[in-house]
Every structure is written in C-alpha cells, then in structure tokens.
Image (cartoon, rainbow, N blue to C red; front, side, top):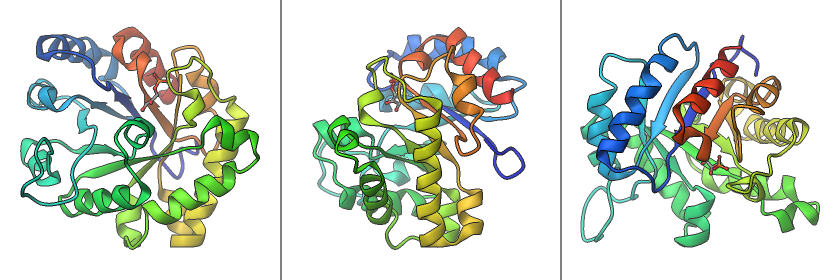
Length: 255
Ligand code: 13P
C-alpha cells in the first residue's frame, strides 16, 4: 500500500462463527496483537456478538463492525437490522454487498447501493465488497464486472461519503477456497477499482479511498499482498478466527 496516502484497514469478517463467550475470548486474544498497530484493526462479528464486542474493545484500538444492515430506517422487515440500530450500539463499520450475501441472499447492486446510503446516513463506515466470479475472470471481463459494480454500488453518493467508504476487492473464486489471487492479480484489480473511483469522484478521492483485498488472505501471504501499491489492507475470513494468524496479518500491515 501507499502509506503516504492511506492507512491500511485490516478487518476480520467472522461470518457466521462464534458464540458470545467465544467472541469475547477471541477479542481478548487479539487485543495484545493489535495494541501497537499503525493500521486500523476491525472485527466484523455476527449481530448477536456486537454488544459483547463493543464492550470488550473499550479502551483499545480495535473497532467493531457488523456484516450487513437493512436500507430502511425501521418498519415491517422481519429479521432485519437497521443502520441506526448498529450506530446506537457503538458499532463503527458495516460490511455491505459481500459475495455470500449476493449469492445466497439475493443481494443486488441496487440494494447494496441503498444499504450504503443508509449506512452513511447513520454515520457508519461501510466496507463495500466487489469482485468477479471465476467464470467472469475466465471470460476476460473482470474489469467490466468491477466497473459496473462500482458504478452501481456507489451511485448517487457524495465525494465526501466516498472518502469514508472502504472498498474490498474480493474475487469470488478466492473466498474460502484457499486459492489466493496472486499479489499481481490483486494489485491489478485494486488499481483498476481506484481508476474507476478517480473517473467517478476525482483523483483526490481515489487517492484517499481504502481498497482492501479479501480472499484466502492468511499469515503467510499477507505481507506480499500488502506490499502492493494499491492494496490497502485486507478483509479476512477464515484466518481472522485464529488470533495468532490475524496478529501476523496485522504485523504484515505494519510492515
Ligand atoms: P476467506 O479469508 O475465508 O477466504 O474469506 C474472505 C472473505 O470473504 C472476507 O470477507
């Protein structure tokens, strides 16, 4: 990453893992590993763990994120959680448009865009996930897919709000598969995403915006991925559930 322009954001996406006592223990184990980090450290935990996490990180440099929010402020949306509810809890970040939500829960660019606007209005820092399927990469349309997702997901937001938004480049074929994008592939895609943001919002915003890589990032490959100019951190699934591994990734970002 380019440390002169941006600060790395290392975020764990715990997905549907950990009960409250387990979440508490994992955060306790992460605390000393994050204590001297010069990157932003975030744990994105299941809804049921948010209050536990917010209390556990008090007085530390660890931030708490949720993994989704609804786009309406309130109402008859059984099972959903609003951005205001998260903000009131003390949650700072929210992951939006993760490929698992797109794949299993019919999330579309249109609803990601609506959720993004709701999250920003509530004062949350969104982490918006974009990324191509293996089939799309093989067909040579990775740039088109990323460009389309960025145009639709970030439609109608202000330049100031874009600056507050973290983008996570997560190639779908690299998620949970153990197949990491090469550092070159990650750099190429993150740089392309930044060029799209430059066209839409101007170079200053593009230089300031954080573009993470996500997809089988781990203690071994993090340093190489994070050494790339346009890779400003990571959104980490499996390896964020093991404190020593997550700690190694934080160290790599400090690098
Ligand atoms: P893995 O690190 O388990 O591949 O998951 C990546 C991811 O989806 C983070 O949001």
